[in-house]
Image (cartoon, rainbow, N blue to C red; front, top):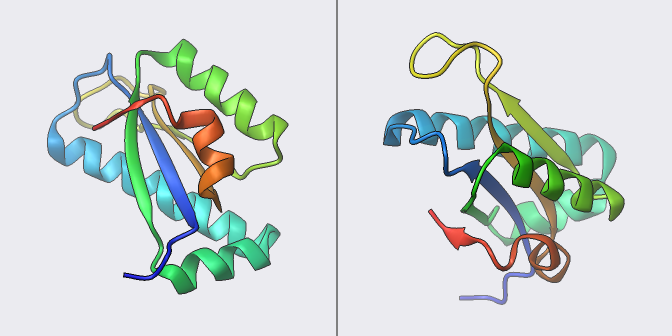
Length: 120
């Protein structure tokens, strides 16, 4: 396998205990939003990430507070972010923030923010 240097990381809230299906959908929302935003606003990084195979990693934060802290750290490094808010039609109340997408960006840049979080 070639050396993959770019990725999107989606951070999900560990305190929500979402079903696997709900979690998958929320992660997909974050990844798609980040990709579309990067394609428009950070074209070079988007192209590198896309051409490498669109690597995505899912990790978990303890709670909403940690999610916001990570969002601030990512934005302070000028990284693309997408905070996902649920419509409330199934498992959680409307307006519940479920996850945060970060990137695409270099592995080193994203790992400096999310590297200590556990994989889902």
